[in-house]
Amino acid sequence: MNMNDFRKKIFLNSQYCTYYIDKGCTVLAGIMRSFGYKYAVKLPQEKLTQINAVYRKFTTMMNCLVGAEILLYVYLFMFPNYLKLLQMPFFVMGLTLSVIPLVMLYLTYIAVNYLYENYLARYVGTFQRVKFVPTIYNIEPATYEAYRKTPKKSVYVMAIMMIAFLYYALMPMIIDSQVSAEKYEKAVKSANVYSKFVPISPDVYAQRAYAEFKLGKYENAVKDYGLANDYSLSNIFNLDILGVKTYYLSFDAMINEFDAEIARRDKKIERQFLMAEKANYLMKNKKYNQALAIYNELINAYKTREDIAFAPDEIYFNRGQARTLTGDTQGARVDTEIARKMCADCEYNFDTNLVRRP
Image (cartoon, rainbow, N blue to C red; front, side):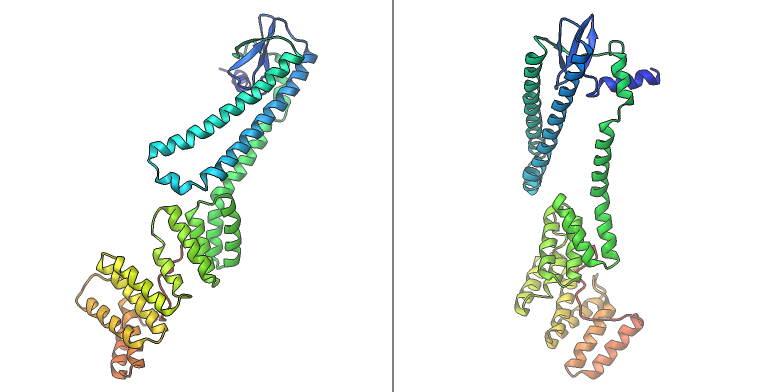
């Protein structure tokens, strides 16, 4: 097949191929292009020009209706029920996501095609419904040449689709770069816009949550980390939520949060990590003796060569601070020296390590 024939094949499958001549009879394309309308005569060019203009109006109407239906289906059904859909068996979810839009689209084709048939019957004349099967040999050369020289609307549609795809694909990376550059206000604004169009992205919710945390919008951050958990179908951001809560919950409520999270952990190494965070929180709230008891337990675990998830130098340094504040200056000096030997250049504080950079 040469290039010209290949282009004609593309033309045959496009909405620009609206008719062909079959043994002296004109066959018009239907909106549902699997069938067409055969007239017993060859229609004059003036009439075909008029029909083509009306055909384009009907196809434009159909494309607009289909586009609107898809958007409504996505934003009024898919996104609001996204989590419920994911919890369905795969077969049921597949049927739900395919059957409903296919039925909607098929009914739209039927309705628009019915209106077009009425137009043809009233303004052109009686027709015979046949299969619409044009070939490269029975298309009108003038029509094909007009197609080649006419700017293709499909190019603009593809450009719009490409822009939409690039926005969908690149915007999360832009938000991530804004967070990395500590442009937290911009990151929140960008995520706000993106989540309006794509309200099911866990990565974007996590990025916005971290930016809100850095801006001191703690309750918003907890809400967004919760959404990130929901849409990732996991509890991966539970520790981040716990860390953010240390900045605004009351002391008693936060201790209960720590104890509940520690109790949920089956692995000792995870419980010890949370205990270290709890001890730091106790230090920030001037509960030095309670913090000291936890630091002692953690250092004993380190000395007995247990697997640990906390930094031992930080625990030694923090225990030294607790000892200083409880009057054990000699013990504080020993702990501080051990910490400095482990990491001479490290700086320590009691801020939470639970909130991670996404």
